[in-house]
Image 1: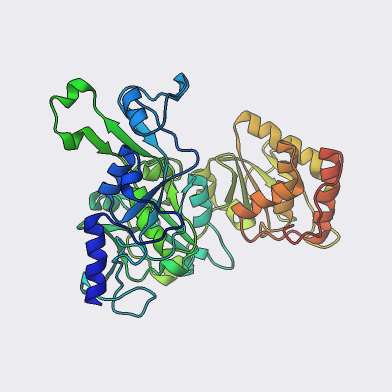
Image 2 (image 1 turned 90 degrees about the horizontal axis):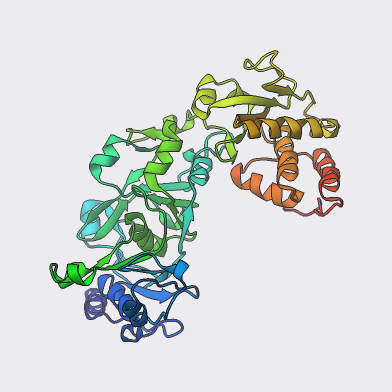
Length: 439
């Protein structure tokens, strides 16, 4: 075991990589700016994507093998931008705590009760950017209870400083510690089994790596080391290490905590430890269908004054037999479509009025909540019908979007058949096969 570890450490010190000849090449064959990345992160392998974009002064562009760019490609003097994909070296020095795991055990991680994530293992799921609305919807998924109660549903990681984390963070987020250039997460988190792994810092908005070379005047005044500034977001740096341990892509929150907390301030907290009964009692918010404009929820959420205030709801579409407490007798702000939750329910006569009502409020800048008793059948169908009208798109495409926003929707066969007829009205023909399992 010690010999294997020493061999791996020796490889990292020498800058040599594991012999995976399918897609790796020697570091010396890389353009100079990419060799700098290799030296900065010897545990990772830079591999240019097909759409490698490089911009900056002509000399540095030539050094990177990019050639001249059109004027609109310039970012201004002194900047080179390269979009890179990183492949981890197989058999890195990831260690686990004392319990059994698919990774090697021992090392400092055991003493601290943490997993070290600097080393990479055999799998690399990759990184993707996650929009704030996507994280909002992930946090608010529900079955009988909030899905946050499921241990392998979400791993939300905050890589900001301890002071910033203690001041406030997104609900259920764990703070990631960093010691000796190693990212550490609580040992209770089993990344291999987690469905959603989301990492955020203050404001990272791109997966790109930026190389900066100062102007000639500045080069005379500063050292050689500071001339070459590599600027990855902290979330991206951490995400690269995490991606080696996950089955699904690691999500990097676009805009970081600053953007998310500005939009969803009600999902901030100072609470660090969540007891199971507290997660059981968590009341999810409605699903966000059109960011900041259209939400899909249930009757309980439609009756909650805090939700109306937090989401700035200005109008309701009630697709149920119940009567809610808001906008009563105000037909400008409430559309009440009274249909039963039954196989014989007929929503077709109301669809034109429904779409007109929602369209007018969106044009006025109002935020609308569409709801039914449970928010999974009649309310879902109303939202699907509107998306088909608003975007002039198929039932299948609308369904894919709504299903992504709210996982537990389940429209009845009778209402789906009526949406198929609505598709003919919108597009002139029935495009979606309603017998398709995806629909």
